[in-house]
Length: 164
Image (tube, rainbow, N blue to C red; front, side, top):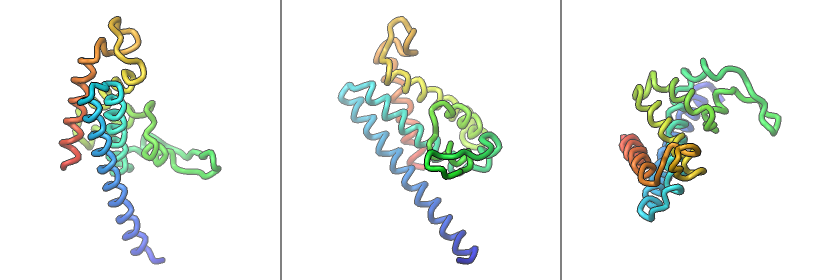
């Protein structure tokens, strides 16, 4: 296969990946909205978080050139295959690295919005597992209404981005 075929194939794969990512974001966002309508706040928080994680991965896919300077080296997978660490981060988007990814992406995509909504998504992820905590020890949300407001903010932001 000559190099022009590889370029075309890679471009098509990138387009397919982006289309699938946008579709996945839309589906997770719709599920979060449906859970909200049914007052299933923790489920809605989980889906909103998953949608944001997918969105970050989508942005990261187009910004590998930035992320490779942060996530350097290679990692061996369980199956023995060795991959670039940056590609592993983009594909898996570990929760523990979302802030680092967001800060890096902020230089190219939406400035502080990316960092803000990443923090909001991580807060919602915490809420999903711990629920509300009136004392504010186990969760940043003291009641479900506070979480609902943030879920709606995140959904609105994602809907605007997926349309674009």
